[in-house]
Length: 145
Ligand SMILES: [Zn+2]
Picture 1: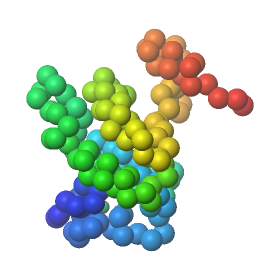
Picture 2: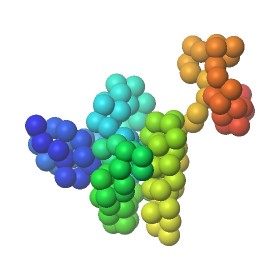
Picture 3: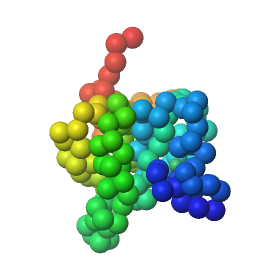
Picture 4: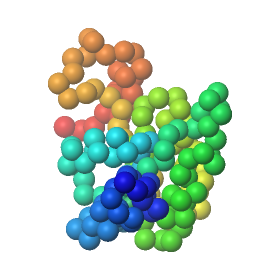
């Protein structure tokens, strides 16, 4: 197995089958923490996009800084100018959100739309089992029916 030099995915070839797939919209990149997140999104099959695997999240307490993650490679990919949207699909944790903000900062000035996953009510979820943070996020991210 090899690590893709473009996106950080693990595959038998480099660049990986996702990066070389001409059927995908390579102008949309979904940014994930780990390869397992990439495959979770692939199983969902909701989007036919490219990926970028960070290899973790920023965590000063654990001594993980920007240079320990695949952020430079992401900035380089976007700087080439072929990316129109970056979907930051990191975990809804403090570290994940810190990482999302850092990435957004690094890309300021580049012509790319940056979005993130919605936070809120899980499919099949019942409101009275949700924590206050999730309910608040769901209310703020409400959409028209
Ligand atoms: Zn790849």
